[in-house]
Image (cartoon, rainbow, N blue to C red; front, side):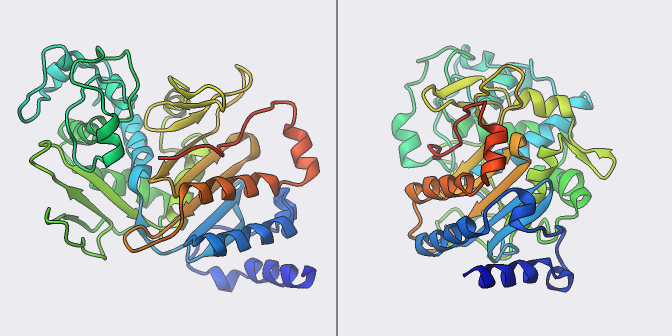
Length: 370
């Protein structure tokens, strides 16, 4: 087994194998992880039906599984991409987080927003605390079933994971900048990071449930009987999503440039809404957050998608993880499998690396699902 592991590591280290790749390779030991434990992780990925997993330590790949260049639908992991664009354009003075929906000219199809709902601030929308419980495009059955009745909570007072908020946040950004959010992402993030697989080929879904162009990197999904605001979906490879995660691990810096303001990353990854106090799970602004064990500790943050995808950024461990499943075809992977994968990743850390972090007692994101 040891010989097999070593041969795999040597293959990973060969530059020619990854000529079209943005990442250097290091051994698991160099990253502080056990090769044998990572082989158990690999077996678990096979058994569960994962399509890809990529693990980075300090920007270098120490584990990969599957086709990391295959573009797959992000689902709810689209929200962190919007987070980056908001940070950039707020810093330029094009976005005012204190502006209300009234000031932003936001309403929706009947039953229209009430006067109270329209007092929600843009910051409330980004925190999913708008208090607007209007039906939304791409709202799952579970989200619709748990949606509070209209007027149940004043703006800013209650957290509810709300696709209406996320969809309208995309449209507000487009109105403020005069550009499609996809074009903003392409010019502000994808190109500067050197994404290898994202091509900014964007379409509008037919709206009849038919498959969306498989070559599209993103698409608008309208459900006009529910809302005038479309959901905006992305397809992205594990490789390119890991680049995005590494950007956030580096607090927005990339090759000497500050692509996303560091203070915005710090502000938006604070635990504004506690989702599960027992496990320290919270929501910030377009990111899930692990509540820090101490006030001076930098939070870890992540986002999942339909309980099977995950992008995780763990500053304490210099770790970025990306897990992908092809959810546009039949799949067997489930949220219980994701919890198991997360536990195996963190359990693979070598004792000396574990000891360096043991004083915090911080739980890992093994109970997250969306």
